[in-house]
Every structure is written in structure tokens, then in C-alpha cells.
Picture (cartoon, rainbow, N blue to C red):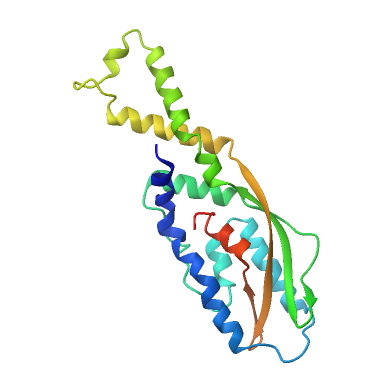
Length: 210
């Protein structure tokens, strides 16, 4: 199974998330603080809400806290069953660790956290090899391997699909993971606090597929 084909099933969901950086930066420029900003309880509540939603794998909820509330398309489902299975496993893999509340640096307020999540590309890198192994095991287990072949002497598409599905299950059972540090800015506007994600956070929201 081509990794690019499986990943494309997720692109429809996360493709627009990378636009958020350019969108929210424009909002920030319009509302730059004029005096030093100190962390407040409200800012910390916002940052913890973001981290809690991220830890739960609720990426559409994270989007609700982003400055400017850009439309990320994270509430849409992948186009295929395999894509949905992959995306659900990715969201379930997200784990957030942070040892401090938000903090001030100059006139800005930030929140830093460590986020461990599935490395989709690495997890899928051995998918074709695993499907080939499963095919060999299936043929070896048959007294007459030719009986599995279609009239044209080829592996039937139904069997190919079953092997691809099992290979994906095997890969998701032992996913490759990576840990990244995210640092997002907290911004107040009209009494409401919002999060401005950095590139590391955007990469996590997009599954690293951007």
C-alpha cells in the first residue's frame, strides 16, 4: 500500500490547518500590546484548556481557542475507512506534559509543553513490507496457494484489501512516536484570551502531513 495514498485520506481533514499561522499573525499585528503584560489567572485558564483539549486528542476543540478562530476543517472526517482509522489512532496517541503555568517574557505571555504523538510517516513506512509478509504467510498456509488466485492468476483485490487493512492494524498497534516542544502565545482581546500557535503546534495539529 502506498503511504502517500493512505496519508492523502487525512489531508482532506488537516490540509487547511497550516494556513492558521499567516491568518492569526495579521490579527496580532492589529492588537499589539502597548505595555508589559503579566500572566493572569484567565490567561492560565486558557492555556490549560488548550493543553487539555490537545491531550484529549480533541483537535477541533483546540481550534476553538486559536486567535481569530480560523476554520481548520478539523471537525471533518477522512474520506476513507483507513484514513479514519489512522487519524483516530493519531489523535489517541497525543500526550501532553507540562510542569508550569503560562509565563511572561517582556510584553508577551507564553505556554510551553512537551507533546508526544505518533510519527505518521515513520509508522506507515513499513506498511508495504508488512502487507507482503502477510501475503506470503497467507499463501504458505494454503495447501493449494493457486486456489487463492483469481482467474487471471493475480491476487484478488478483496484479499489485497484485507492484507492492507491488517498491515495497517499491525502498524498502529506499535506506532512510532516522537516528542516535540510547543510554545504558544496567549493573547487577550476584549476580555477574551486566545492561543497563537507556533510552527511545532501547527505541525501537531496537521499530523505532520503538511
